[in-house]
Length: 150
Image: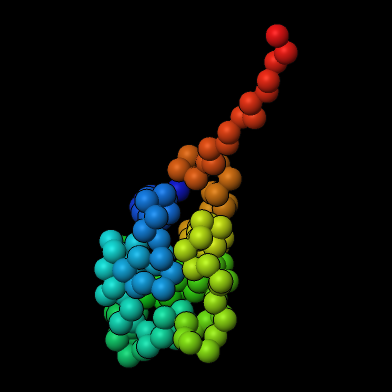
């Protein structure tokens, strides 16, 4: 399947973060978009709240000028992050009143968020969801050990 450069780059960064245990939904440097933006938090200045889909003044200026960050517009970055956070089990935007998952950094929570973010990234590029067959996301399954009678 043919994918875009920006999608390949984003998938590789998210895969690496997931497997290196550096994916963290509550850290702007290590969340989905933080990882896509090379572990910087500059993207957080596009909105007033983490998880919000509403661009602030700075975000609107960048959006209206047609600026892209690692291949994505400001509004796309906010949507990617929102998909990731919702997949992790958060009620958006992030704040102390809204619901959040019990174990923020469990592999299951992060994998659910990762699946949601990847699905959204694929829809942005008009590509079928790659989670099932993209080489970086293939799960390593252990073959059950069968004892043989001697």
